Image (cartoon, rainbow, N blue to C red):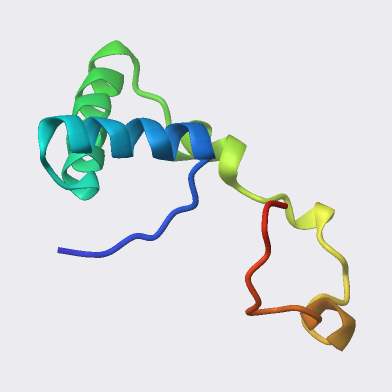
Length: 85
């Protein structure tokens, strides 16, 4: 089994955590159930591409600085905990 780490909006995280606590199961089990349910529904309703399903979470490379990989000012604060961005 592979591992995938994602960042969720607070509302969705607390919804999953609350459901997991109410059902006395782990958060990962809730997420797996939801992914399995949604996967089956989306395939039955329409065959959309992975890109169209994830378009809202992908960063457009044109929105990033051109010197991101070489300019050290972009690394300021890297690895530090930030409250909410």
